[in-house]
Amino acid sequence: IVRDMSTGEEWRILSMTSAGMGQWANWSPSGRYVAFLVDISEAGNDSCLVVADVENHSVDRLDVGWPTTQGSNVSAWTSDNALLFPAANSGTIAGGTNVPEDRHRIAVHDVEKSVTANLRNFESISPVQRLDASLDGELVAFVIDTDIWIYDRLAEEAYQLASSGNEVNMLKFSPDGSKLLFRAGNKLSILDSDNGSIRTLFEEEDGWYGPN
Image (tube, rainbow, N blue to C red; front, side, top):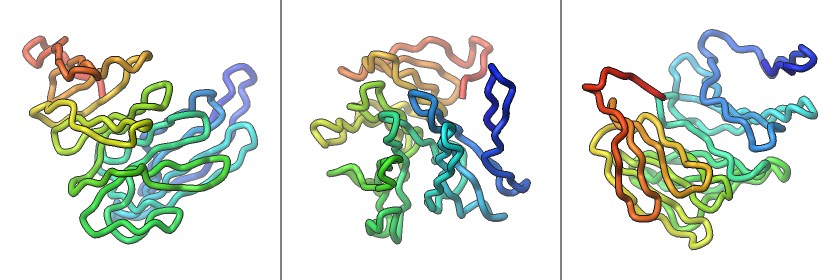
């Protein structure tokens, strides 16, 4: 449900059963669109990405077929009409692009044109997790295993920036794109997106938990 806080009006995007929970809600920069994952099966391995146009009250659904495991399904907006998401690891993704067995990619969906394509010159044998994009849309940060990677959309190349040594539960760019805030295990740190240096803010022994 989307609620207009000034008028109190509500728009029910869709109704879900207990098995069809929505997660990883993500607003576009202008607030016109909201995207989230919906599990459409009892087994939790058949999913679609819902993109709702709040202004026109219209809904688009991308069949992505991800397992709905924590961390593997985060989408990220690079502009008000471009949405990044992890591509399926076999068969085809939206747009008819073939993805070889055991290869994972990052797809970008143009909401206005309803066209999806893979980011160029990138694929991985391990799943892509915890996507985030800088505000200018030039840099894409993500996690493979316990490593933090950057994809430069101008240079069309990906590189490993750092290794966290633990499962990454949260990854977020600073407003200027120069740093990444991330949580690995129960340690909260800041990563310099230029040189890969890491500064720890809080550790588990400090008696804190979060954020996700």
